[in-house]
Image 1 (cartoon, rainbow, N blue to C red):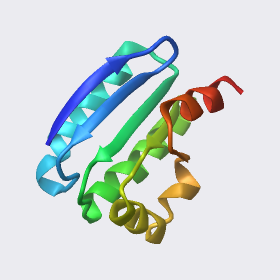
Image 2: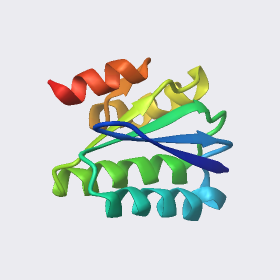
Image 3: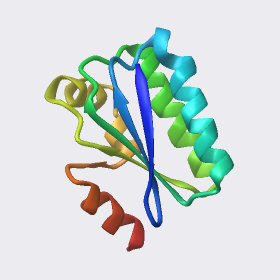
Image 4: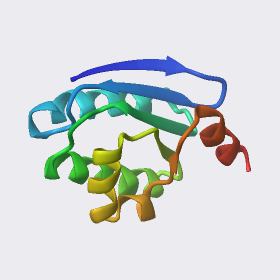
Length: 112
């Protein structure tokens, strides 16, 4: 998995490419740690190029949600592919982390 970070005015976007699985957990955790050190109020995780997610990936998202709630920081998911969206729905991830189809929608929701 490769992760590219983009800084926006009120958010940081992590563009994920590859599978979010047990073997990629360290890369994902390191990217999130960099975000945490940046003191930004909103993290957007772009899942557009993630084709597969296993239970470890789902667990990482659940832990991310809990951790960010404790620190009063916002996290959003962006553009998951249909298979990934279905897996996340089965694990109730959308009840923890909002999912948006466009970056603009995610940014607008954080401003509201």
